Image 1 (cartoon, one colour):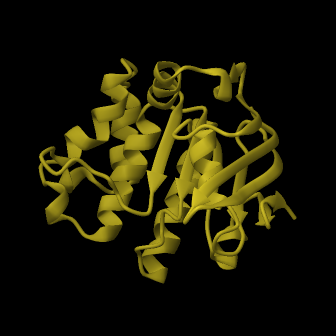
Image 2: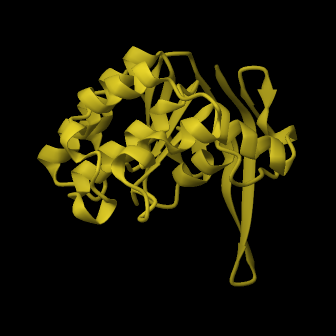
Length: 217
């Protein structure tokens, strides 16, 4: 479902070229839940952003299903993110002016893929029924992240990408949010790739991949 081959990416910082990815290879099957770990600066977030089409690699190939992400235009990558990918970040990125209910439905409505029954299941499973009329500023961090996860899954993506999604949460809340995410990913059948520094959280997924010095260790 996801295939990454010989991926390279170099950034220029302070007049110096820094090779962040030096030929990364990675495969992820439909329904598989994979943790991506490694020390700071190893390229984890860069890899996730390239897979999501938020940036372009210098070399190599990324395929999601039949789509070669690196060959898509800007509009094509935006359509891929809208229709087929779910993105969850450490910063919850909810729209402050929208209610919980409208935040949850935002991506699926824009994509024209809103499923009322699936939306209702997400509301129930994420424990958001009593919060639907509230706004993000009225929620705890854990509640905001639940909304962000629900929004990402509402579109029924083929792949959910999460960059330190529990980084701003306390340990108990992080465990609860990730357990819900694992269950909902299994229910939806999408692939799940999560960047995390936590060996404890990584161990709860199907497999762990480690980046070191810009390659898969």
